[in-house]
Length: 91
Image 1 (cartoon, rainbow, N blue to C red):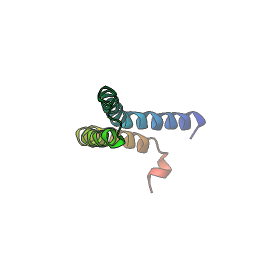
Image 2 (cartoon, helix red, strand yellow; image 1 turned 90 degrees about the vertical axis):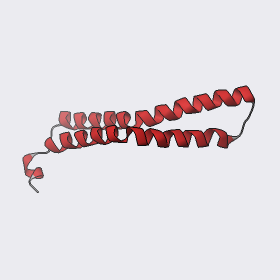
Image 3 (cartoon, rainbow, N blue to C red; image 1 turned 120 degrees about the vertical axis):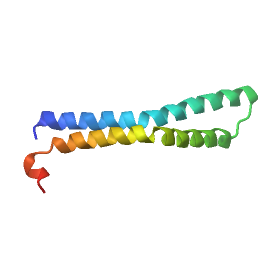
Image 4 (tube, rainbow, N blue to C red; image 1 turned 180 degrees about the horizontal axis):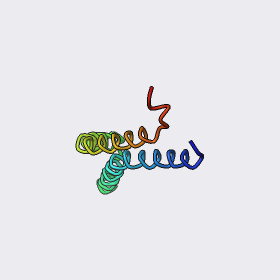
């Protein structure tokens, strides 16, 4: 494996981790922003008020996005396995 191939492999892994994590992080951020706005308007400053809705929303996001996330990860894994040198893929 050449250094350029190794760099491409690491770059693709980082990009894939961003793609897989982005839906969950975006949902958590948007729900946290909405709850923070509601807390500021109502002056309720309890930590559980913001934590529980974020956990529920992120769990729902995992359930909704799971088929898409699985397809992305399987495609990435297949591409990585195709790039293995022939003497490593025979084992």
